[in-house]
Amino acid sequence: MERVSPFGWPVRVYYEDTDSGGVVYHSNYLNFMERARTEWLRAMGFEQTTLKEQLGIIIVIHSLSINFKKPAYFNDMLLVDCALTKTGHGSIDMAQTIQRDGVVLIEAQVKAAFVDAVSFKPVGIPAEIKQKIT
Image (tube, one colour):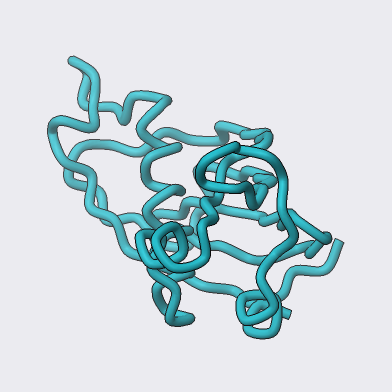
């Protein structure tokens, strides 16, 4: 699967992100990836609050797969990458990595779906978003 639209977002590991050993707690990697996806949208001019208020849609995670390769530690400076790998009618697939100094710590495949903000029923990707991401 070819990666397109690469985007990176820096994240510093804070003490609150770690366990008692100073290692990032596994679920916090999901938070880091969420921040990067949010910033990816923002960089294209799309605020999630605006999508909900003006278009009546929200973007939810449908599924994900994550491989933990190496740990991150307190005070590490990480780079969280997002790359669109597939655009469907109402969903997108992304490859995400978390790196420290060019070393891949985390690899993930994420599928995000566009849904109606009230009913949570699937909807198509709005044309203005689809145009920018493809």
